[in-house]
Length: 278
Image (cartoon, rainbow, N blue to C red; front, side, top):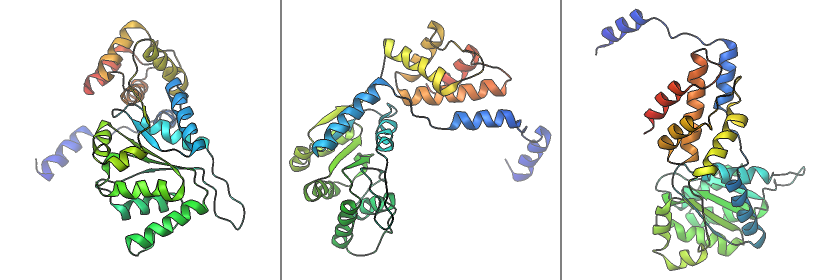
């Protein structure tokens, strides 16, 4: 399609309707990422707290969209940083997400940025030493590294050294691919042998979670009865028990329902959105 043809279509269809202030406020609310204290998140936090207290490292492993990231970041938020005038901030738990093909310099750069320190140039050894000094100066007790299966193979040795040299509990978060990678290096595997599996939910757990999402996250004017048999069947088939997918589908369905002038999620809208995620 040429630009002229596209312009003709746009002119024929007219401008996209602008949401009312009230509707836009609701959409913005539904787009906010809220923390929900699920039982499996509490279990994860108890496990992480045990590692932090004992300064032991480990892994959090689970399939994508199971809620690992939300759970780990929520643990960081529960351990609030503090600062005294004239001194570095105290950051008990640092949480980072690393880029694809992450090497040593990228790792140290992400850590420094998270702790609000300027990333300096230099050799890997120089940057490593400065990063370790900053981690110690900020009183970091636990470093959570998400998407850890993105590390270049040689970078795992750097992560191992952070644990060995700084006595910081290092937690690697990733999919089962992470397990396959670290098991190829005995020294790395031995330091991160402890593993917490964060899985999918089903049955009554899934029903309870959907009910929590309706009451605490969506909070629409009228009850949608999402835990009813028909609604649950639609959600279960579309999500496979993945919390992340359930969250995406329910938020999008709620927004579409509101834009249609509805006060709750109806089955027709839910089915349309759910079908797009299969």
